Image (cartoon, rainbow, N blue to C red; front, side, top):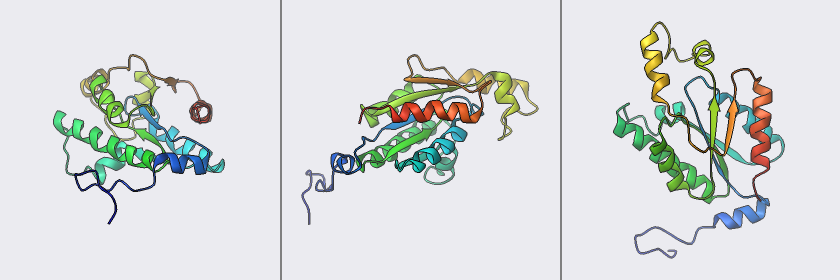
Length: 193
Protein backbone atom coordinates (compact mmCIF):
# COMPACT_ATOMS: atom_id res chain seq x y z
CA UNK A 1 0.00 0.00 0.00
CA UNK A 2 1.28 3.50 -0.86
CA UNK A 3 2.20 6.40 1.36
CA UNK A 4 -0.56 8.39 3.04
CA UNK A 5 -0.76 11.88 4.49
CA UNK A 6 -1.98 10.60 7.87
CA UNK A 7 -5.65 10.83 6.92
CA UNK A 8 -5.72 7.71 4.72
CA UNK A 9 -5.48 9.70 1.50
CA UNK A 10 -2.81 8.22 -0.77
CA UNK A 11 -0.08 10.69 -1.67
CA UNK A 12 1.97 8.67 -4.14
CA UNK A 13 -0.16 9.29 -7.22
CA UNK A 14 1.45 11.00 -10.18
CA UNK A 15 1.47 14.76 -9.72
CA UNK A 16 0.02 17.47 -11.94
CA UNK A 17 3.62 18.48 -12.69
CA UNK A 18 4.29 15.02 -14.12
CA UNK A 19 1.34 15.23 -16.51
CA UNK A 20 2.08 18.82 -17.44
CA UNK A 21 5.69 17.98 -18.32
CA UNK A 22 4.50 15.10 -20.51
CA UNK A 23 1.99 17.35 -22.29
CA UNK A 24 4.20 20.46 -22.27
CA UNK A 25 1.24 22.49 -21.00
CA UNK A 26 -0.06 23.60 -17.60
CA UNK A 27 -3.64 22.84 -16.64
CA UNK A 28 -6.05 25.66 -15.76
CA UNK A 29 -9.66 25.94 -14.60
CA UNK A 30 -11.51 28.41 -16.80
CA UNK A 31 -14.62 29.41 -14.81
CA UNK A 32 -17.28 30.86 -17.14
CA UNK A 33 -19.94 32.90 -15.34
CA UNK A 34 -22.96 34.82 -16.57
CA UNK A 35 -26.74 34.76 -16.76
CA UNK A 36 -28.58 31.78 -18.18
CA UNK A 37 -28.63 32.29 -21.94
CA UNK A 38 -25.43 34.32 -22.10
CA UNK A 39 -23.66 31.57 -24.06
CA UNK A 40 -21.43 29.83 -21.51
CA UNK A 41 -22.18 26.24 -22.52
CA UNK A 42 -22.29 27.00 -26.24
CA UNK A 43 -18.86 28.63 -26.09
CA UNK A 44 -17.44 25.83 -23.95
CA UNK A 45 -18.57 23.12 -26.39
CA UNK A 46 -17.14 24.99 -29.37
CA UNK A 47 -13.83 25.73 -27.66
CA UNK A 48 -13.52 22.16 -26.36
CA UNK A 49 -13.68 20.97 -29.97
CA UNK A 50 -11.19 23.62 -31.15
CA UNK A 51 -8.73 22.60 -28.43
CA UNK A 52 -9.16 18.90 -29.23
CA UNK A 53 -8.28 19.66 -32.87
CA UNK A 54 -4.98 21.06 -31.51
CA UNK A 55 -4.47 17.96 -29.30
CA UNK A 56 -5.07 19.97 -26.13
CA UNK A 57 -6.88 17.97 -23.48
CA UNK A 58 -9.73 19.78 -21.72
CA UNK A 59 -12.90 18.71 -19.91
CA UNK A 60 -16.10 20.77 -19.80
CA UNK A 61 -18.06 20.81 -16.55
CA UNK A 62 -21.51 22.27 -17.14
CA UNK A 63 -23.84 23.44 -14.38
CA UNK A 64 -26.90 21.73 -15.85
CA UNK A 65 -25.07 18.42 -16.31
CA UNK A 66 -23.65 18.58 -12.79
CA UNK A 67 -27.10 19.30 -11.31
CA UNK A 68 -28.63 16.36 -13.20
CA UNK A 69 -25.92 13.88 -12.15
CA UNK A 70 -23.47 14.29 -9.27
CA UNK A 71 -25.42 17.12 -7.65
CA UNK A 72 -28.93 15.74 -8.28
CA UNK A 73 -29.50 15.57 -4.53
CA UNK A 74 -29.29 19.37 -4.25
CA UNK A 75 -32.20 21.80 -4.53
CA UNK A 76 -32.10 25.50 -5.41
CA UNK A 77 -31.74 26.78 -1.85
CA UNK A 78 -28.82 29.08 -1.04
CA UNK A 79 -27.10 26.27 0.87
CA UNK A 80 -27.48 23.84 -2.04
CA UNK A 81 -26.19 26.40 -4.54
CA UNK A 82 -23.09 26.89 -2.38
CA UNK A 83 -22.60 23.12 -2.16
CA UNK A 84 -23.09 22.76 -5.94
CA UNK A 85 -20.22 25.18 -6.58
CA UNK A 86 -18.04 23.56 -3.90
CA UNK A 87 -18.44 20.06 -5.33
CA UNK A 88 -17.96 21.28 -8.88
CA UNK A 89 -14.79 23.18 -7.97
CA UNK A 90 -13.43 20.09 -6.19
CA UNK A 91 -14.05 17.98 -9.30
CA UNK A 92 -12.40 20.62 -11.46
CA UNK A 93 -9.40 20.54 -9.13
CA UNK A 94 -9.20 16.74 -9.50
CA UNK A 95 -8.89 17.18 -13.27
CA UNK A 96 -6.20 19.84 -12.76
CA UNK A 97 -4.28 17.47 -10.50
CA UNK A 98 -4.19 15.08 -13.47
CA UNK A 99 -2.91 17.78 -15.80
CA UNK A 100 -6.26 18.32 -17.53
CA UNK A 101 -7.67 21.82 -17.95
CA UNK A 102 -11.37 22.40 -17.36
CA UNK A 103 -13.92 24.79 -18.80
CA UNK A 104 -16.54 25.26 -16.09
CA UNK A 105 -19.94 26.72 -16.97
CA UNK A 106 -21.78 27.91 -13.87
CA UNK A 107 -23.96 30.99 -13.42
CA UNK A 108 -22.13 31.64 -10.12
CA UNK A 109 -24.37 34.67 -9.51
CA UNK A 110 -22.51 36.27 -6.61
CA UNK A 111 -18.92 37.09 -5.75
CA UNK A 112 -18.87 34.72 -2.75
CA UNK A 113 -19.56 31.66 -4.95
CA UNK A 114 -16.83 32.68 -7.38
CA UNK A 115 -14.41 33.30 -4.49
CA UNK A 116 -15.24 29.86 -3.09
CA UNK A 117 -14.34 28.20 -6.39
CA UNK A 118 -11.16 30.24 -6.67
CA UNK A 119 -10.11 29.31 -3.13
CA UNK A 120 -10.58 25.59 -3.82
CA UNK A 121 -8.85 25.63 -7.21
CA UNK A 122 -6.05 28.04 -6.38
CA UNK A 123 -3.71 29.98 -8.66
CA UNK A 124 -4.78 28.14 -11.83
CA UNK A 125 -8.31 29.62 -11.59
CA UNK A 126 -9.29 31.98 -14.42
CA UNK A 127 -12.58 33.88 -14.15
CA UNK A 128 -14.31 34.62 -17.45
CA UNK A 129 -17.46 36.73 -17.57
CA UNK A 130 -19.78 35.79 -20.45
CA UNK A 131 -22.01 38.80 -20.85
CA UNK A 132 -25.19 39.34 -22.88
CA UNK A 133 -27.91 41.97 -22.76
CA UNK A 134 -31.22 41.27 -21.00
CA UNK A 135 -33.03 41.34 -24.36
CA UNK A 136 -30.59 38.84 -25.85
CA UNK A 137 -30.81 36.28 -23.02
CA UNK A 138 -34.59 36.55 -23.22
CA UNK A 139 -34.40 35.68 -26.94
CA UNK A 140 -32.08 32.75 -26.23
CA UNK A 141 -34.18 31.40 -23.34
CA UNK A 142 -33.73 27.68 -24.15
CA UNK A 143 -34.66 26.63 -20.59
CA UNK A 144 -37.82 28.73 -20.40
CA UNK A 145 -36.57 30.61 -17.35
CA UNK A 146 -37.70 34.00 -18.58
CA UNK A 147 -40.80 32.89 -20.54
CA UNK A 148 -44.16 34.57 -19.89
CA UNK A 149 -43.09 36.14 -16.64
CA UNK A 150 -41.47 39.55 -16.73
CA UNK A 151 -41.14 39.59 -12.94
CA UNK A 152 -39.37 36.22 -12.89
CA UNK A 153 -37.02 37.41 -15.63
CA UNK A 154 -36.20 40.57 -13.74
CA UNK A 155 -35.61 38.58 -10.55
CA UNK A 156 -33.33 36.08 -12.32
CA UNK A 157 -31.33 38.74 -14.13
CA UNK A 158 -31.05 41.02 -11.12
CA UNK A 159 -29.80 38.14 -8.98
CA UNK A 160 -26.59 37.94 -11.03
CA UNK A 161 -23.86 40.32 -9.87
CA UNK A 162 -21.21 40.96 -12.51
CA UNK A 163 -17.68 40.06 -11.37
CA UNK A 164 -15.49 42.92 -10.15
CA UNK A 165 -12.27 41.90 -11.82
CA UNK A 166 -12.61 38.98 -14.25
CA UNK A 167 -9.60 37.77 -16.21
CA UNK A 168 -11.62 38.09 -19.43
CA UNK A 169 -14.99 39.52 -20.52
CA UNK A 170 -16.73 38.22 -23.64
CA UNK A 171 -19.88 40.10 -24.63
CA UNK A 172 -21.91 37.72 -26.81
CA UNK A 173 -24.80 40.14 -27.40
CA UNK A 174 -23.89 41.03 -30.98
CA UNK A 175 -20.99 38.65 -31.65
CA UNK A 176 -21.18 35.36 -33.50
CA UNK A 177 -20.47 32.10 -31.71
CA UNK A 178 -17.37 31.65 -33.86
CA UNK A 179 -16.03 35.11 -33.00
CA UNK A 180 -16.67 34.67 -29.27
CA UNK A 181 -15.24 31.13 -29.28
CA UNK A 182 -12.05 32.42 -30.93
CA UNK A 183 -11.62 34.99 -28.14
CA UNK A 184 -11.88 32.26 -25.48
CA UNK A 185 -9.72 29.83 -27.47
CA UNK A 186 -6.91 32.39 -27.83
CA UNK A 187 -7.15 33.32 -24.14
CA UNK A 188 -6.71 29.65 -23.20
CA UNK A 189 -3.80 29.17 -25.62
CA UNK A 190 -2.04 32.25 -24.24
CA UNK A 191 -1.90 31.02 -20.63
CA UNK A 192 1.64 30.45 -19.34
CA UNK A 193 2.90 26.94 -20.08
